Image 1 (cartoon, each protein chain N blue to C red):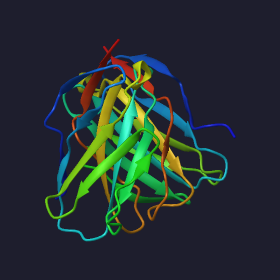
Image 2: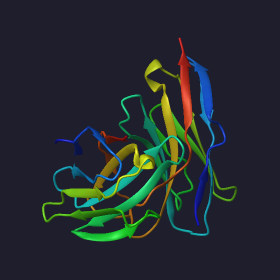
Image 3: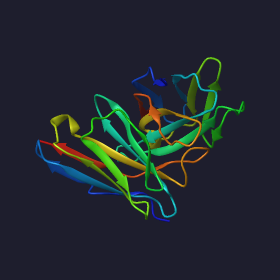
Length: 115
Length: 114
């Protein structure tokens, strides 16, 4: 069975600084996708970034980028120039390839941004 | 384009009752998935539907059921409610199932069982 592990329950970063959130996963599949979702206090889940396993290049979305280490099964999220609005719970998620949308989530990392 | 909508947003029920939650996907989306979020168990997959067919089901008791209608709207039902069913229930939709599709989540329904 696939699993997703987030070992940092809470993180804190100063505004304008950079922070990295860690995520590891376990799977025997070769075709899969990885995601980072943000859940602010409103509880609305928002997709931050996604990575296809077959792509070697790390995904980037503006201030958000990932470090995808396929052999190590590691998928960390880097947030640059942190803003107050980045404060939220961040979930790492895995989805295997094929005709399914089933996401397996990690336990989340609560990110606080200090002004 | 309107986002995923879920109704009701908040619900209070008592043990033993049943409840039905509704999810309207983004227009044109045919795939709907449901998740349960609790402080203890985190986010857990309930089931997913595509074109009125259940494609996948999570590890939940038979008290949890769902369906999808021809207009892609989906409902989930929980019968004989237990205290542990108190949770935020999230629905997500996408155009199709799998591939490179992005899932968009609704705001959730918060269920409290007393």
